[in-house]
Image (cartoon, rainbow, N blue to C red; front, top):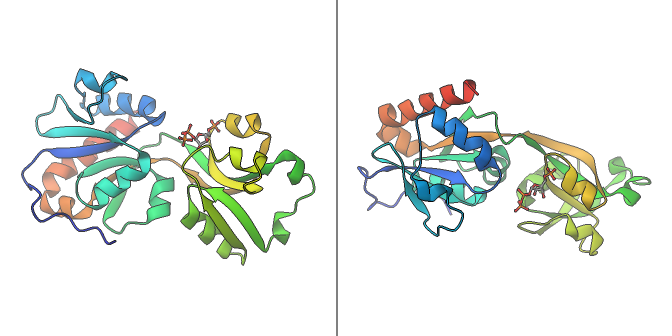
Length: 228
Ligand code: PRP
């Protein structure tokens, strides 16, 4: 479905910044503090069920959602700004989402992995059809189609590393950071797909409507990222 902002949405409401849950928040919050953004105390409380948070800045709110959902909230204009990994942007490729700032955090890579035992005799240049468990079926299909390999993707939303040992398929495409999750599951990287980092994203229509207000936030967060 092509995202179109709800016509009834208040153009004058608070600007919403969508943040991804998970380990990236530990790197992101000091960056936001340098940009002068501090959330209300409930944001740091792991037991709090609140999903929408005020900040020290009047008219700026934070929401905390799954990283794939950040792109969706921003694409539909429900959030004007967001922080999301370039993996998610590559997977969805929403034309309404503009990603002008590489925040230089959340650095990792997207890679193909398989059991260490298989990799000893495997030759990726001979693959013609492979089955892959992944959260990234679009990226995976595109990556392999470019060299004439047909990738049949089994979509999972987490714990991809379990798939080979349980016989779901022999290979996975997933994010790799330290490599500890692969190693703990007897998997090895056999192919690099892309380097990944977190991006500041903006809804294009919101930027057109409020170029000064949103433009100022882009600059402030860009400066905070450069100062990190
Ligand atoms: C990511 C990714 C891997 C792991 C890689 O999952 O999907 O499982 O991190 O990190 P490593 O190389 O440092 O071990 P994450 O922990 O973010 O949770 P998820 O499975 O919910 O995506």
